[in-house]
Length: 430
Image 1: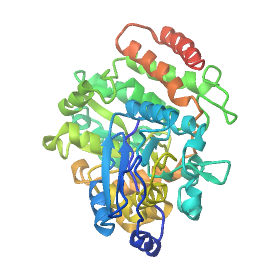
Image 2 (image 1 turned 120 degrees about the vertical axis):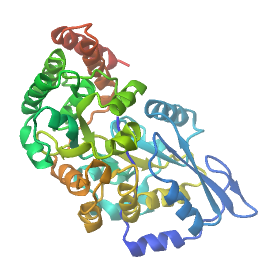
Image 3 (image 1 turned 30 degrees about the vertical axis):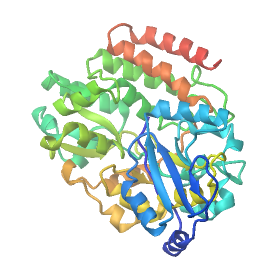
Image 4 (image 1 turned 180 degrees about the vertical axis):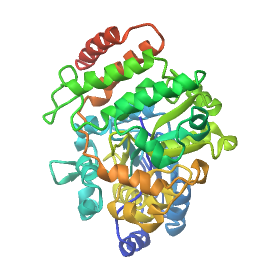
């Protein structure tokens, strides 16, 4: 899953020019309009807090004839609703966020979306991380959406629990403990031997996701053919995670559930796979009383990415031009920088913003002044893109469910693997 956020790649001058554009009146539709007064309303639909409130206020101030409303729902509900809205031809917001895992599915119906290349998006090609730009395009000239964030991977860890276990607490020394995932699990066993009443990680599903997101090809190959049952990496990572669960390294908390939030607050785990956007969730769940107990170190295996989104404009919008301008503003360099430095902590997907001294110098006091700008930018910039198939999102679910069965002690790793393969095969027919 993810909880990705937003911004854009115009230059300061271009951004100022775009902001100065007069938005003309349009007829009512996804966004409403007042032909007499030239007033229009644009709606932005996301699946979490993208950190847009101050940016929307800024946009409205420079566009007094525009009102922008936010519509926020849960990840799956958001994308399922979008599918229904596109099929029916009505109900979609003017600007709609799509998470990277769902993007291949919606790229199949790209004719339902405005081609942002018609609104200047191609000028941004060289501004994005190469894999982010590649994800946003179809057939070269069709730009599906403006890239928002990327989820550069790291490991968040509890310094107090590491100290209790006699492990190093300095983030550089901690990262040296786990150059590989095998070393990460071995360190977890050493931790459990000293601190038996705490788990090593929060959720098998989250660890497996992080591992899979480091592969060039996971469940699908470059031709979009399913390889989840033949790719040795999938089985290797599944079995390694399952074995760790059987050694009681997992807190067995369903990701992003109320129990998961409570587990973070209670400090039930020593580490968490931690894309940039996770820092905001940890702070929210753990509360101010845990400030200084958490820190951040590099992820096993080097770079990695988990999550990231795109802002799209459905064709059914009655204000496509204005919606494209709003999407561009929300993904500007200035916006990306502001969001990363705000509570959500979403990592920019624009290369120059990642290199910006303000971003590189960003530290998070909550995490012992961890240099999050350096850690997450290095992770996102150093990874190879992970190919996501058209049905990637639905195929991943059975593997996560199967790992959950191991955590619930309802299945061995071998039995769970067989079940995951069978259920994944069924999902391909839907």
